[in-house]
Amino acid sequence: RRFAGMESATVATAILEPSYHYQIDHKTQMFAGMGFGYAYLSDQGHGATYAVRGGIQFVVGRGILAPTISYELRTQEEKLGAHSLAYLATHNALRLNFGYTSIF
Image 1 (spheres, helix red, strand yellow):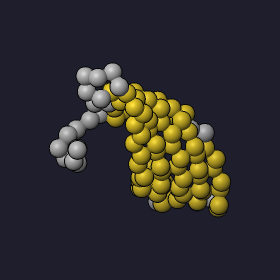
Image 2 (cartoon, helix red, strand yellow):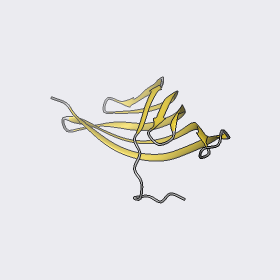
Image 3 (cartoon, one colour):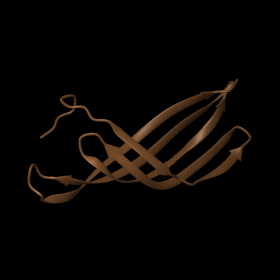
């Protein structure tokens, strides 16, 4: 069994994600998107990834504050040791993000 902090891996994803934006007022808008793409984990190989995102954007000062929530599901075909037996593994993550973009 793997525990957090005892092993590291690189995760790379490329997702095509169309999104819908709805302007609430001149300083606020909501958005939602759903996408799919390719995922690669350095210790497990490649597979598919699916993502659903939503959030709201606020104009704050000279920038945009964007709290978002996202759910991502990744799949990989994993091999069990030296045997040729393989199974489809899934990994999922629920994320809360707070981003700020400065406008120059």
